[in-house]
Image (tube, rainbow, N blue to C red; front, side, top):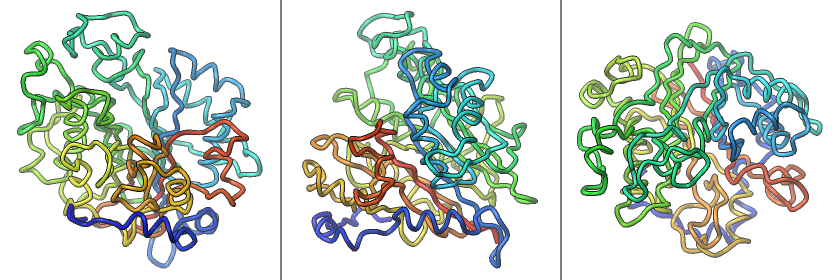
Length: 418
């Protein structure tokens, strides 16, 4: 993609009927098709990302909510997953609980039970781990309130390595129908921002003590190798901080940029990745020629919103990425932008590609959730699960009659392994 390229958003809004690029009919057809099986062109696998908003305001609340099968939001999340039927899925904003109790409860009480006519879905493999959100840094990161050590307050969150009220809030989990090579997983939770050459840390904002300990990842960055028969695909997942909720120093926008850059360097060969070290002390990036899929709520739209220097174009323009002919899209995103108006009417990006339903006046709906396959993988069908109002499944994205699932939509991409 080229930074100078723009879309006529008003023209797209005016052609709503023609924008049904990835409606639920396409999802249903492809969900019952060949993904996860061998076909004429090799194995087709569906990768997906979903910021499901399964985070809670207090530690332990998610386990409580998932301990019974009748939590309305969790049922909506599970049904959305069942309707899309991914083979390998990243869930963002799923509170981390040591030992995996929350993951097991969600799988057993929700995914393994058919929701409102959807078929149960089974993920025998998963990976989760600790994240930086809510982990106290021990220093005054924002330079405003001293070191605050009491969880549950905004001041505590501001001085944590990643904003959060308790350790593990806004965590991540990878669910897979295929085996995960857990011994080969690499995590970058502890990598220090200052150790990225040419970083964009805001000058004169952080104290020397803060710069010395501040981690780059607001949650974590994980390289999760998934075994697809005799092949391995690296699922590169993360959830960079939103480029907002800060001041003129743009500390969150700059951090978001460099969190995205970590993956751009990781897949960029030895000359770009040699500086990286993972949580076990192993240096360097992904071996050249490895196949991968980058996924997650990147909190970055290529054209609109508050991103620092069009941050996600570091991936969308990357030579190691094999973009599909058209990005994942939906009819619901087009309809929502038309009905909500506000900031949406002045945006440059095509609303068919939006993946999040944000504030109508600021920043408007955005394309922030991405599933990006590498060269060596052949992208096939894709979509954004955002049913329009005339679709019975519109209730899963909020029609006033049910609990709103999330302000994000699931994004999915089929790939073929030749």
